[in-house]
Image 1 (cartoon, rainbow, N blue to C red):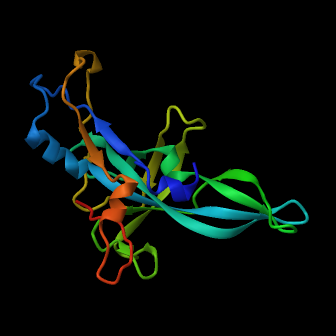
Image 2 (cartoon, rainbow, N blue to C red):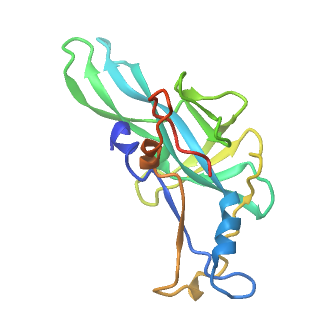
Length: 208
């Protein structure tokens, strides 16, 4: 899926089934509000257009941003630098053009050059169209799946994001049954286009 189209898609809707806690009760509103502190917004800077040179090498002609969701992993309720997200949030199918004729030759899957966790409403600089220094945390991609299923990746942040902790995960999935309530928490790409600044510049929706 091309990055431009992916920005409008549900880049990641985290489906977290908090069906069982230590007391064995189904999740309620308090559990969901608590779980919010385990969710982060991710920005990935990736090549979007490549040009095939005469010698067969590829040169980056254009870059693009993609946004998605991640959640903290580690000891539940404690700060963490490890986050799970989706591979499709990080990778992009960049268009490849001929440097001689300009025709579209196809697509090449490429990895991001930079990945950030956006941890405040000031993390995105709409004028510079980039993650704002001091309001975003660089991440290293430790792993991403080679196929579309399972579609997941693991990030290590340079530091633990403020006010974000590791998510409490389900410890016994056998107790989940059909028709149990589930809650989706995250940052679908389409939400970015519901909020326009007073200067008419599209920017990501708020962190909360």
